[in-house]
Image (cartoon, rainbow, N blue to C red; front, side, top):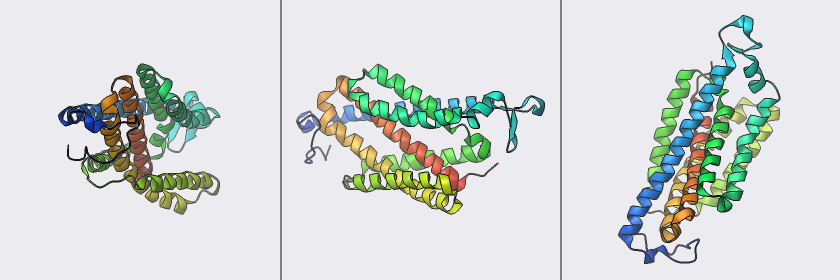
Length: 263
C-alpha cells in the first residue's frame, strides 16, 4: 500500500509499516468488512425494532384505542411509548448506551461489546419508531435509500482518498456540538426555520464525519491494529461500527426532516 510510509502516530507506539504490506492490505479489507457488517446488522436491528414497536403501538380499531395521535389510533402500549413519561426513557437510553460502550470498551470482552451494540441498536430503533407516525412510509423508505447511497459514496471517498482529513476532525466535532445545542434550544422555541437550517448543517457535518471516520478507521488499522490484532482489533471494529452507524442514523434523520413527506 502506497501510504504505509506516512508518519502516523500508532496508538501502540510502533509503526505497523514493519508488518508485511500485503498482510496489512488483506487484514485491512477483512477489518473494514467486519466494521461494515456490524454496522449493517445494527441498522437491521434498529429497523426491525422500530417497525415492531410501531405495529404494537397503533391500532385500526378506534373503539379499543387509548387516544388518537394525528391520523393514527394508539394502543395503551402506544400511549405509554409516545405520550406517557416512558417516552423520555427510550429517548435518552441510546445516549446513555453510547457513553457506556465508549467509556468501557477497553475493559469489555468483544462478545460483551457486541451484545451492548445490539442492545443499543434496538433502543435506537424504539426511539426512532415514532417517525412512522409523522412521515409517510413511502418517504421513509425513499430517504433510507438516499441515505444509504450517500453514505456509501462518502465512506468510499474516505477510504480511497489520498487527502489527509485529520484536520477536519476538530471542525466537524465543533459543528456536531453546535447542532446539539441548536436542537436543544429549538425544543423550547419550536422554530421550523431553525429546524430546517439545522437539518441542512447536520447533513453536511455528518457527511463529513462519514468520510473522516472511514479514513481514521483505515489509518488506525494500518498504523496500529495490524500489529496488535486479537481482541484489541475486534473491540476497535465494534467502536468503528458504532461511529459509522451513528453517522448513518444522523444523516437519515436530518434528510428525513428535509425530504420526508409528513403524514
